[in-house]
Image 1 (cartoon, rainbow, N blue to C red):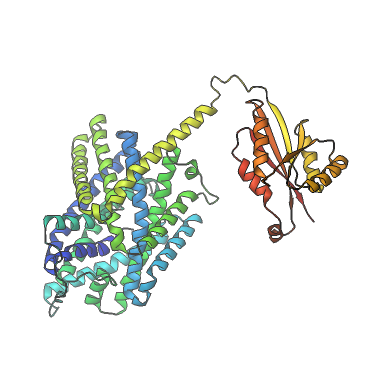
Image 2 (image 1 turned 45 degrees about the vertical axis):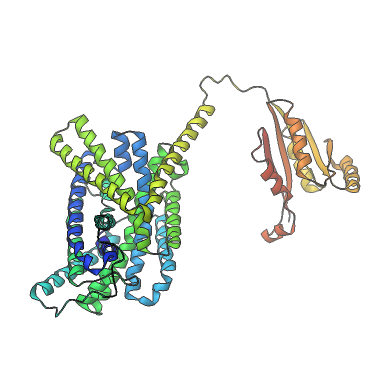
Amino acid sequence: MRFSRPAFLTVVLGLILVLAGTAALHYSIPIGLAIAVLIAVVVSSYRQTIFAYPKGGGSYIVTKDNLGTLPGLISGAALLIDYVLTVAVSMAAGVAALTSAVPALYDYRVGIGVGFVTAITLANLRGLRESGKLFALPTYLFIGFVAVLIMYGLVRWAFGWDAAAHVPDPRIVAVQDLSVFLVLRAFASGCAALTGVEAVSDGVPAFKPPEAKNARIVLAWLGVILISLFVGITFLTRHYHLTPLPEQTILSQLARQIFGDGVLYYVIQASTMLILVLAANTAFADFPRLSFFLARDGFLPRQFGSRGDRLVFSNGILILGGTAAALLVLFSGSTHALIPLYAVGVFLSFTLSQASMVRRWLVRREPGWRWRWWLNAVGATTTGLVVVVITGTKFTHGAWVVVLLIPLLVMLFVSIRRHYADVAGQLSLDGYGGPPPMEHTVLVLAGDLHKGVIHALQYARTLSPSVKGVYVELDPEKTRRLEEKWIKWGMGVPLVVLSSPYRSLLQPLREYLNHLLALGDNHMVTIVIPEFVTKHWWQHLLHNQTAFLIKGTLLFRKNVVVTDVPYHLR
């Protein structure tokens, strides 16, 4: 589902190189070839990961298994960030394909992108899974039509059918010197083409038996197709001297140049948009799965390990969709603004995963370990150098955000794990001598005396023989009337009147509660709150919310139990 990446990554190469003027665009060919070699190295390395982990080996699991917990957490944090950015960038690029064909929608790109994210989030909450039937048609359409585009473009170039290539826009002048740093920055941006390669090794169990063999075959074909599309589009872009435009993608310009504004152009744009939007579903499968593994090991809240009624990890799906939508709004749906954040995390996880495989081969020395070790060592070294290049060249353009977020996430993971360990230790029954004797006082809060309060008094007497009614005095005359009714209807429960000279309801109650709790560490106080329930929800708005305020104030008090006794009105 990542075959559409070469299209908009060629745009990124151009956007960086054009800073040195249109004359610098001829460097896109050697940079594209360097990225193609990198794709081949990473694909070959990950085929070894699939061989070693036939049941699925995401970077977090592989790194934690071979290098230890901390490197595994770094890899997990990097991948979580990358999955969020995958959704945001895929949606932004899909919308760019749409607005290139229909320019009138350009001003609405943020809303359209958020709508796409919402739709795919809801689909995944309903239990949508990756399936050949769903993704096969748009995938085959995109690959087929872009292959036709590239081959026909190469034929036109070979036979000289183009009268003359478009002349670069003379208004585009250099704003920076063409330096090694600028070339490396373009290379770093184009490296985002590799994001998604790890998804095959993550999802090995999803393949048909034999799973590992089929996954290795798919990964090999993924590399071949990705390299072919990337190199082909890059070459034709250079041949036609296409320059980046904010309102139109490179692939759109290329399709218009070769096919014109006919049916084939709109088919290519439609298939590009569809495959980019659907490509985000890879992250919707991997982000919740990785969150589950982290939650299982105690590094994320346990809610991430719970499946919803559709047997999907609903919390992970909601967090992913909400965060990606927020990024689209924050960055105005621009792929060019999001790209600097991209690829840092995934290449860091690439490096850790391949370094983990190097250690695995050296330690276990399984059959064929020598050449496998060498292959993974090349992969780890290559991707490690790319991490340095990406971080250095894109740091001031937004990569610093990811560099900062990764250690913050790791610290969050460790804090969560420490909290769960502390809770488990305090709740453990090991060495526990049994509970001490407990004293219990029940307080029934009364603002007046009516059927609801009597119902609460009756309930309170079943909890403890030590029951007291509590009334905060705000009006002495009202207190006198209440005491008269209490003698008749109070069911023998003593009434405690708390004076409140400043007409505060909560302060006298807190002071009285502190007095009772000071009687002993094992003194429990149950607060019974009578509350009548109206027939219609809107009628509830006509009454004060004193009970809600009291419950919120006392909710986390030690040795205090708050219970609500409803009295339903007809």
